[in-house]
Image (tube, rainbow, N blue to C red; front, side):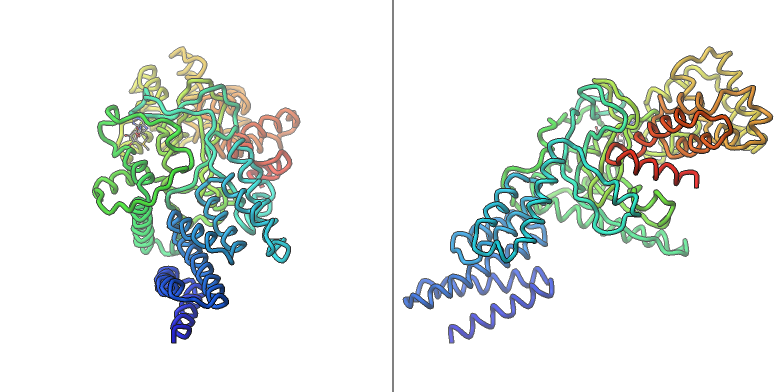
Length: 525
Ligand SMILES: C[S@@+](CC[C@H](N)C(=O)[O-])C[C@H]1O[C@@H](n2cnc3c(N)ncnc32)[C@H](O)[C@@H]1O
């Protein structure tokens, strides 16, 4: 009778696990575990006892697997420890425990588990799988120490196959009070263009391919948003550390009063944290998500101009401390659930790291409108400069020329004349050329306009360099630079060097030189 009941409970739990019905299988294993424990205490027959303990160990191990899939990491780790204490399913359990530590970004603990597994009797039978785990673990552990990774093959191969493995990495950055608003991230040393400063995994992400017909697009976006919010809320309820980190994010108000966290608070979890937290402020959570969630501009979706219907949203806590600037210094790439933040130009020690929350290759007025829709008034150096130096009336006239869509050569030469009159120097030229990029690019890409205006306006190289030095790299600069390579008499070596620098600012250093060349070619094919 005892045997039969246990067998049927175990069979049911195993079936649920195979069907990937994680919650139900956890329940079924829990029933099996509590009943078996009773029998273990009562049973005197040694042989029977050994069998029973083996099943119990396996049940703990399987329940750990199901909990792991539901991201109930700390409960899953407790199950692994129980399974290992009883013994009999050690290899499977160690593998599961290692994978849990990997997900918690605790790579050396994961490595210990895989190494321990390799000494056991089951190791030779599963040598290939074990080797795969060890290799992956060593690789991500390296990335977490150095921030160095290589996704060239995946990118050049058209993003086929598995998403490359990445790991949490926090480079030489710190959180400080920002001159822009509230807190911000700052470089602690000089950073070269393309260097990776941060790799971090999302608390949650959600993605949709929007339907072809636009009228259903809003519905799909709302469904995506709702599901994303549910996921973040579940993560915050499951783990107090996650809850507290999300709670310290800005809700867009009184930012200057917010506490300045230490960067160490964002390092991977090392403490047990399985306190369920059902008691939190949903309204606050929604405003925080509104202010801090990032819309994905995924490398895989956009590079080829494919999947333009693809949309994604996610929350990356540390990256949420990066303020917007219209002369940004960093860009982000999305690979899987990770966001990679790299310098999009050379950055000096002590400088604030800033993203472009919206398109900054446009005029001050258009940028002001976009900032408004984000709920703030932009306080960045470029906006302040343009406001102070450029007479409003003349700027309005220049903007009107663009809107009228006349010969853009007129626009560009007028702006260059105005800059001379306003005595614009250094960075200022980059700022203003970036503001009227639409006009510059039209002229620079047109043989006809260049023939007509070429002598009155600066060369492609001068325009691109001045914008790159201020606003950082951008795909549109790459495109014009690559077109420039085709011009008769172009110094191909120097031009390619310039394009490569722009490429490093655009994609970062995770792509080898040859792969970068291939990517750059695609911008003008
Ligand atoms: C994702 S948070 C950035 C981090 C935030 N400063 C903090 O202390 O947590 C976005 C908010 O920062 C502020 N912010 C970011 N960039 C800004 C800018 N250029 N000018 C003014 N406020 C900005 C706005 O309040 C915006 O809603």
